[in-house]
Length: 332
Image (cartoon, rainbow, N blue to C red; front, side, top):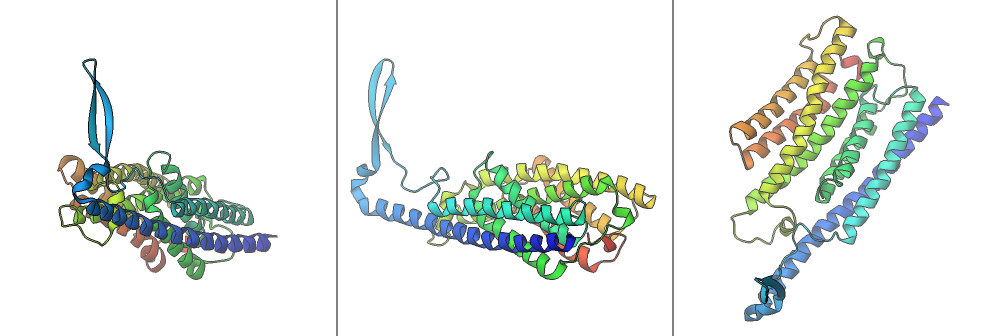
């Protein structure tokens, strides 16, 4: 029964990856559509020439009891408030469908193992990527960040692909040190923090590109960026998202120390995993401090945010696999 459920879990994982690929393509086509809309709007505005009045509209306002008719220029290029294209809607629908399959795979793996599905590197990757997608979808209720669909689905496909090819292991019982309720709390919060850091990295990349484009002559490259928020708004969004991730990572660090004392009889032992968890915390603390008190704005703050996410990925892909320590047996 355990083997059968684990097999079904793998099938659902590959199915979710296939759906995410479709979503990635749809989001990429939406980027192309955005660029095409900007180009068409710009060309239409240029062709209007002296007849720019056609691109204006009349607005009636009341001033001191008198109705005044004013001509207001209509926007010539689609901005951040544009209605989503059909490609964007397909991408979001496929992302939701992929998440359903993804969660189904995760649940079956947990049932097969009779525990939470993040007891080794493969399961950690499986659950972590599902949470990245879930956080991306939930954040849409707060702010329209659908333009990050290409980044988020692309990152998920890469991480899931690496996990299924290199990290897959059969279902095995947990080591004694992992048989604790702290496995549920500590690792889940760490994965959630990583999801917010991934979203922040995507926003930081967008902010860097937007900063580079602003103040330069109009270019035919990356025209879709004109449909995104400006650099200042992207920077604010990056900061807010990373701040949530930092709070979760702070709890991760504290919970890890408490669990280490329960499992190994000390709160801190300079284990490789512990050190890198602290390094990640320091980098993001530096980012928040530099932006909040030192006035770092623009490219500098975004580069520091990307360095932090680079440390997260290094911890995930290098420290977990190649460095030896007390965490090595767990695959985490």
